[in-house]
Length: 168
Image (cartoon, one colour):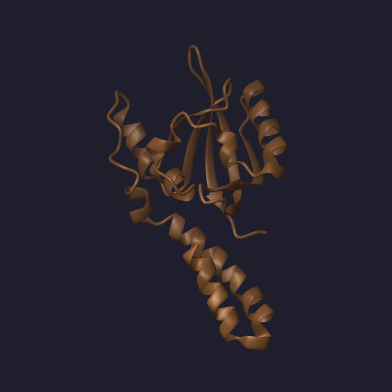
């Protein structure tokens, strides 16, 4: 929101060249938002690492810069996430847990997500695709996602690693 206001102010100051200034600032703004969402302080804001029997694995996932989501393939709910996912989506990891993943999917890309998630549920082969997500403030972002299946006794998860891109 603040960044959008900054672009508006720069465009207003440019007078008749407002459209050119706004167009020139959009790629810079996209890159800045990506960097802002993936910084160390943003990841730390998500809370302390979880304690568990597999502490080393979960602590490692909590510390990676890429956003990580574990999506329950039966319900479409987020079973686990790291702080970077919370920072990317404009919330905390704890608020992501048990949330319906569709609230973060761009309307135009929901079919793509379900196709990819269905595919990974039927095959152990990892998948990679380009898509868009929407954060809690309604801001869209282009992403590169990789998905791998993880089957537990009573639950099958899609392990999704998301990296923001600057493509449009």
